[in-house]
Image (cartoon, rainbow, N blue to C red; front, side, top):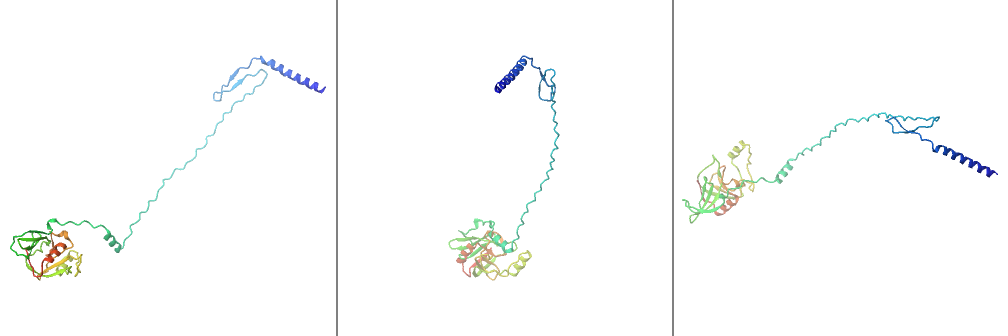
Length: 262
């Protein structure tokens, strides 16, 4: 019985709902209303039947407050500290001398090839074995037999120190010591150059490899450690030759040989 009553109630409910739906199926639908608020999104509004209250919801406009702009600190210029330049280290005198010795030597002027030794014709008045020095042309001749002479280039006395005459070789020395005369020492001192009272013979000695002493004078025929000076008037009256040439002449002449300086 209870089951029959429950079924009847359920059927009545379904019929009531179906009737309500049937009554509204042919009712004219409400018109579509467009929202007049153009700043808001388009809103579809349906007109409700009379007697039904419609709630109008107005969209609230959200106004965002302007956020304060972040404050940026002005960048300060960056000053870089200048790198410190290392100061050159002061060298001791011994170190400076060592560096100077290792430094490449400056090229020295070359001697004119015309002053290299050679055999030439000779028709002068002096006999064989005589040494003749032509100071004007910077040549020394060792006269040989048969109208020949062995010619060498020489350096001669500078202006004020020229001399002429005839002497004999009185001494011969290999790698001679140098003892400059007092007059030369005083003269060079006035120029700011200090000469030693004595210098032992050797490659650095101004008299070079050989020396031929002339009579009782202070003059000599000698070598030199400055071969580029051959052919010039640079000495204090001595006749200077290349070391190679004075060694050759040294072996060809003897003490007592006649020397004529023109």
